[in-house]
Picture (cartoon, rainbow, N blue to C red):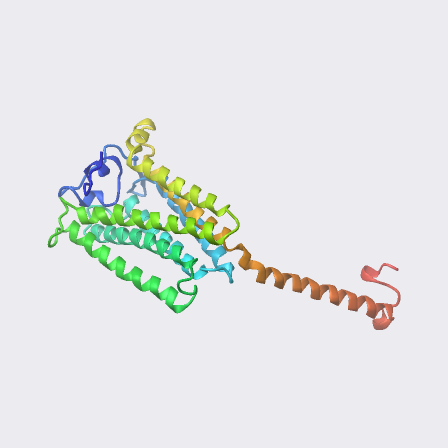
Length: 317
């Protein structure tokens, strides 16, 4: 059972990136973890999970492209920051989980600190996107965009310092008692997610006639909860059952990706009406084509251009 500020039971269950750096000088080893594979003389850890990370990077790229194509959508520039942050977080996690950056490396703690900071920033950006729909600041403006960017940089710097200070036992921080880091990772991030969900429920109920976006929110939070439960409760059981081929981190990564995809689905569902401009422009194109065809018919009927009484394709009228 996990206790407040304690990573021991957490790391004994799940192979998190912070686990080799907290608890003792040797870190905390999980009870059961996914087996590794050797590629070109290099051991690669969590191979199944790494495949999901690659899929996540591809899917996130597709979502970003779709978001950027919605030129008139509300909060387009703000929400794309969330997906960029998630993409960078996924790539960094790929490097750490795979063992490409070895745990014995001096650089490992600094990359893990960046991973912790990016995780918190990703939740933070999602939270701030929760306020965009209320139009406290007009979306897409310098005020809206730079408030997210600057606050994210400040928050990342603060969390990065807390993580590094904890891993290296600097000042009041200590790797054997990483309470401050625990609060950041679980209390702050969890609160940001809860507030975001609450804001979106209020937004849908108060401002939209359509209630279907609530389903996207429900599915998203359900996927995320299932993923966390799989990682922190059932990871060892899964690992033992399938003989170390996968563990809870595999299913947790899948569920996190599905939750992020539901964030995109939710945003897309509440901004569809903003595509009326682009749809209207397509209709205008067809109207112009119809006018050109009518002019050509009238022109040919008058016998101009040497076409006589023949129409399209040379067939007689």
